[in-house]
Image 1: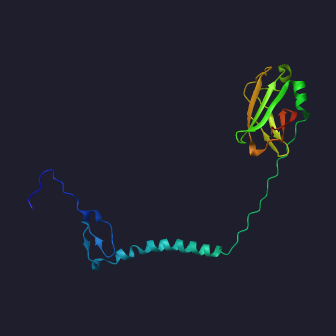
Image 2 (image 1 turned 135 degrees about the vertical axis):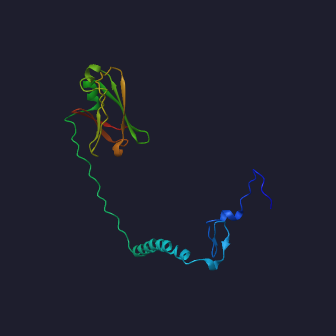
Image 3 (image 1 turned 90 degrees about the horizontal axis):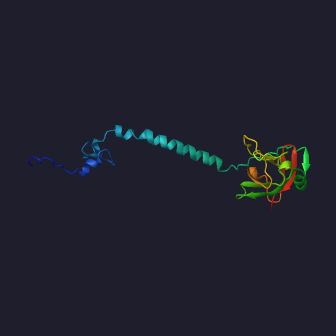
Length: 201
């Protein structure tokens, strides 16, 4: 065969791609050509024995553990429900009607919303001169589920706001641990003044 022309690239031989891959009884050399089975030395046989042993040990161990636990019935762990926290109700309690008469605040709505994830509280100020005694719109009242031992507090604003007559204030509280349900009773606490209200059905 004459010399190859410049720029000529021979296609790689299919046998070259076989280099490094072993088949039963044949060991490929650098050029991908197989040598007879009788030239296979003992080192290539013992090379795979530690790997095989390492794979079989965890399989045998797992099988033994499964066999031991097959006849053992696991008893459920005892459940100790956490008792609700003890909450101290506000010192002074008034009804929603008394809240409006004395302090000019009307509880327009307390309802569960957002698929049970939020509590919508709406307060309408009917008399700002009375509301200013207990209500700061930047510091929302606290919701207390006395029986369930849950208290929900919203963060207060850094500045004090003055309530305005005729203004309705909206507050969204997280429904912590599902403390409130439609129709349940909740205490709206303005400091030491508490108002027992009913959650809208």
